Amino acid sequence: MSDTQIVWLNTETAAKRLGITTRTLYRFINEGGLPAYRMGRVIRVKQTDVDTFIERSRIEPGTLGHLYPDPVSTGGDDGGDDGDADADS
Image 1 (cartoon, rainbow, N blue to C red):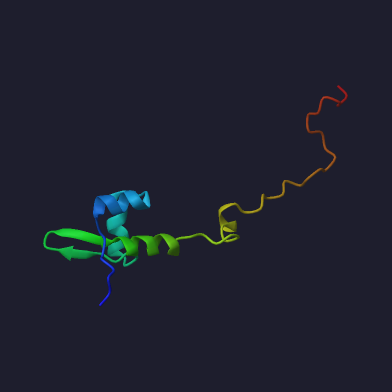
Image 2 (image 1 turned 180 degrees about the vertical axis):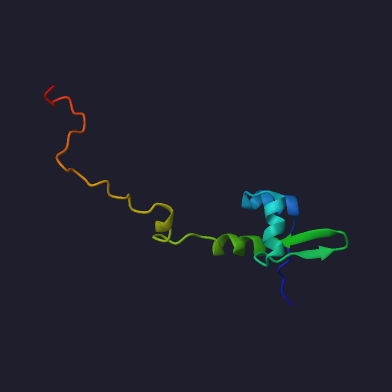
C-alpha cells in the first residue's frame, strides 16, 4: 500500500491554482479535460490532476504561428510618393 496521501482541492482553490474562474474550471471538468469527483454535494479535484492538467497545457515553442500570421504585403517600396519630406512641391 502506498504512503502517498491524496490532496483534495475544492473548486475555488483549484480554479485559483490554475488562474481561471470557477465557471471555466467547471467547463474543463464537464468537457473531460480535468478529472473531478463528487463527494456528496461537493466537487473535489486532486491536486496531482491539477498539476498534470497544467503540464498538459504547456505550449510547445513554434506552435503559435497561427496567432500572428505574416503581414500581408502592401506592395513594398514601389517608388511611389509616400509623403516623405524630400518630395518636391
